Image (tube, rainbow, N blue to C red; front, top):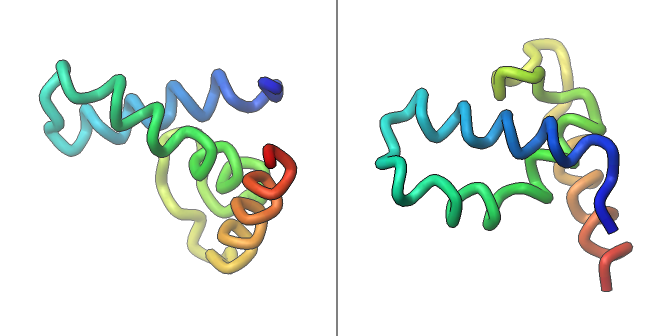
Length: 74
C-alpha cells in the first residue's frame, strides 16, 4: 500500500543522497532501502521535507513510527 506521504519521502531521500554526494547510479537502490524510514520520520514530524532533523522533536517518535509502519506491512 502506498501512502500519500511516500512520494514526498521518496523526493526527500533523493535530496539527501544528492546532498551527500551519492553517485546517481546508487540513488534508486538507496531510496528503495530507506523509503519507509523516511516516510515514518515525516509522518512523526521529526524531519522536515528537506531531510533535516527538526531540533525540538524526539527522534524516538520517528523510530516508533517506523516500527509501526513496518508492522502494518507484515
